[in-house]
Image 1 (tube, rainbow, N blue to C red):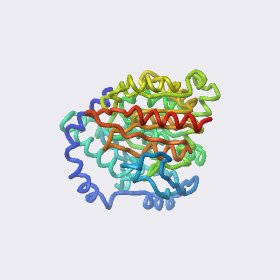
Image 2: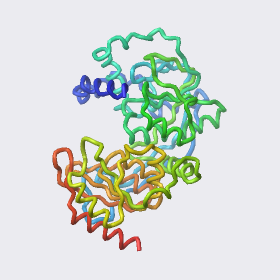
Image 3: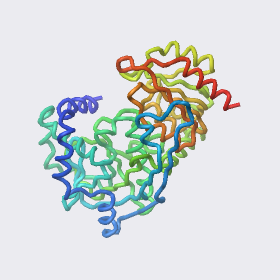
Length: 393
């Protein structure tokens, strides 16, 4: 909670500057940035380059619904090429700032370690915001003797969001495990200063425990070997990375390695955003009356642990939900149908592409905005539910 409050405080100070500051900062740092190609060259020359998998091509096709593609869904229709993933090791680095920025011994910044340039800018600005919101932290520990032997950075400005954590931090553990297999070295994961319980639970679900990570407690730490897996989310998600996460979690859930079992939950679920402050369904009572007639049960995911959420989605055949990070959990479903609800003017593409990667049937409905929330057309939703019932016979 403390980390989240500091995040919000920095937002208030620096968010207005981002549109103007990003280009200026990246231009000023252009000769210091190590992006995908430059980073690979450095790692190959040092003998610490470990490629795995292959480059990929992903074709996203129009959803099979009467609703024409809109917003980001329309933008995502097409064919995308993703680069071959690799993991590399950089010696004698420092992690600096409240949101750590990695610096090599040559003074370069490996952008892949903090996801992408936009996140780097936010890390830099929000670390600088400590001068305004928490002045002491800007100088505390500058002469630190703290060090980590071998580490991978999973903490950044965006990692407090469930979707971003899952597909920009957690999914990179495939690269960490490739590095461990290639070198025989254990890797310490660097998390935020006060990681939420759900982050710990996702790591535990993948077989990690508290001995495998440290929390970020000082603005200056030396790292003997910084392990940098490449990002598995470019314009679109990597199908191979999604498959890796899907298989790892389902294996754990279905093998009774975690409790509860998918058999403990219904196979038709509605995921409410009643615990959120936006994108809620304004007429949820009426929507639930309709859904219950079609065999659905309602869940608020903040009432469930991560293992419970994984089990819930692992056993789901049909998932109905307003757009939001809750739908990240569809990664753990198998052969499901997803119905996503959007506010008009705010149609996003993340879960459309995820459904395409997982080969799920995907439908979406655009609802009338009611402030930050939405009013779902019951007749439209009823038609979709009836069509799903026919197609599943």
